[in-house]
Length: 409
Image (cartoon, one colour):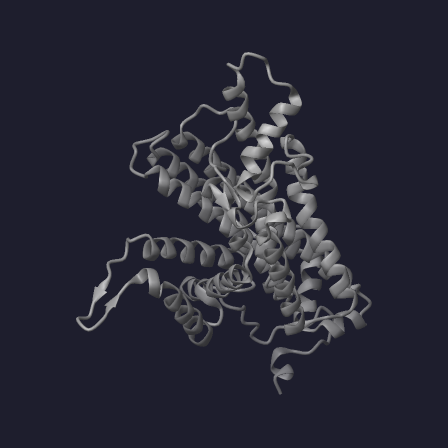
């Protein structure tokens, strides 16, 4: 009798249960729906952390399971934020413009309203006309579609060009980093259509919503938790069956998998595109909670940080990616937000806002040298999760197959 997906992957049920308990606990301790033990700003921090956990799952799927060290997945994360940010900024500005023109002696025409919106949005870069990429900014549905289509199309085209040329290893990593740098440099330009270095701001204000920020922050936390749960479930399903075995084989010995007749390029392209879409969805949920997005968010260094999070948490374990992203995000908030007390040595004062990145780098080196399986590997040891001991059992399904003792001789 074939076992169910959950039976074969009990960690998925455990993860979803813990995520649900966490969400319920935060809800009852929040200022909006609970006892007020958790501030609204910290609720937003937790919501953003859940989004970072989701992109970490995407990174672990493409790197930890498929062996593609992408240093450009934060570009897809940022693109998802820009796509939803365009609608948020347009709709909010439209409401402000209509309200200000409501008392005009002569009712404004539709073109005058559009011109006023364009001036409000693009006046900071010396323009008042909407670029072509803002053609669907007035439609929430179409911008949500673009959250998936734009990063997915970029990943599909880039991956097809790279994988069909059989670029692998460090060369592929450099190419993904170059793609990210090119995108960031383009977004920094004022004529990019996305306000250049100014980026998109005021994204925390939902158009047409009169609820307080306390309530809105909880809505986004619920949405982020739902997306993380579904993303974890999808990633676990992808890696659990035959597909998962193939991409692990590609990670371990790509030439052998190709020799067996599998379309290595097709598998890699699918994983690369799927994880880009997951990263974009995470970004679309993250930046409305952050309130602003600018080209610096797409810089290559952000994707390098992402790889560090996954390595610290434990590459090749979905829950390890979540642990790494959550751990680094919350610790970073504590160190850079003034939670960690500065240390005065007399001759020098250690300011953690300046030394946090050094500490993160040292943590990465320490984990790589002393615990290559990351934090999740340490948890596995404490929980007693080790490879099963065969004790002379057959190493194959057929009668007369090698025994463990024979195989080690």
